[in-house]
Length: 179
Length: 179
Length: 179
Image (tube, rainbow over all chains, first blue to last red; front, side, top):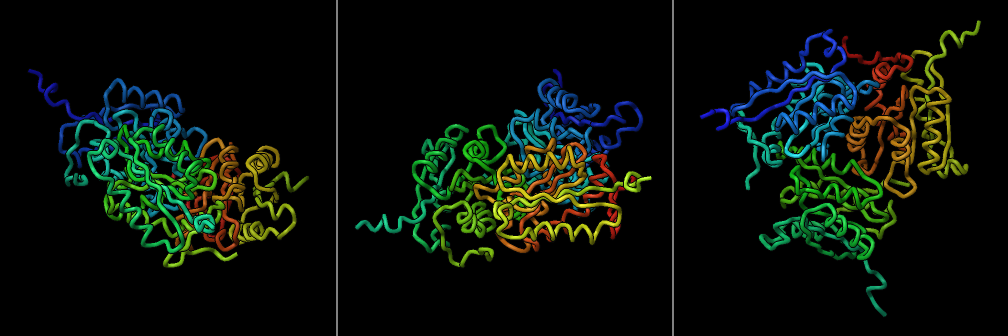
């Protein structure tokens, strides 16, 4: 009997959006920071599925759709490409891939990041749902990633319950409203 | 002489969006909480107009349009259907019914609700204007409804003035900027 | 040799959106407050380019496009037309002129304005980028303009760097993240 078929666990897509990283100029330290954060918090079975893509709305959207529809991710976390510059299109790609947007994620991540730097309002990061998958944009810098995850991660386990994805158990135990 | 034609007062639509409530499984306690709140605050003439509808973008949009264009509501408050789950479509229906959106309502309601529960960012509640009618989405639970109304109700009387609807007088007296 | 061709500096568009101002009923004090604020903060070369337009999405959008594509503004600040009333269309015009929106500006301006008045959530002000130009909506009243600029101006110099517009130096020196 295959133990994986008994409890395949959650698959979390981690997408590095970066022209430079895609061409091998620097290592994708953002994705390492995201994976590390998940290892610290999640106590139920899960595994990461990494992708590296250059900027560009279509590139990023295609990766998000592949991770949702083919790879079966319940949660996708992106890093990079959320600024105001011309090549930054992660929010547009996320909106193109999602069936509904979740404005509360971007609002809270910007608000918490603003306590660190006054330029946090320049981030256009957003989140949304495609079917049973939650997609959340994170910044590119590891320090900013942690600030944003500390803000929104507590709401993610219950969100996954609501959209009908496999459950996630965390330590400390995530809040889930009664009834 | 018909006293109602002298001062018909404000009509406030209260819409319960719920598959369960529509099929009679539980009583619409959200709408009772909304009506109770209005009775506490509004001192000028008004009356509620209740509706109960199952989830589904078209169902909810049609009710919002009927309350605006036929029933003559100046203000419509919805309860339920603002979460991330597949059947939750109240924000989409509100956007479909409105001619302009008011992002400040959703931002503030999520921010205040977040002081109660870390999952408040999962609410996609929004507000907008259709002609001379203000439509505001509220959560489903009575406790959360009060938190949200405490946040945004102080701005509603002046908003109704600005969009040209019948006036609303409240106790305590609502803020209206000078001139 | 023409000194202006050596350092033409930044051009800042200041747009007064007002039916009343356009018909000469009152002086555009909002635009004066914006220009005064820029004089206090910017220490590198710049000059204002003023425009006065009645409300109406197409009117305002055309002015924003002319200031961006013909007048060469790197930054455009509008005043007026962001409320919920039927004639208020500055946010719609801004969205129509922009290639990407920057939600963090509106969120922060409403949050800071809310510390002054409970009706601040009625402002629909937004910001976005058209090519290499940042467009930011400000309120109509001079006091509210200052509140909003105090909130978002610290992020503007770095934003202009990121979108590839001419640099802006300020006093106190603006924050720019390292590397």
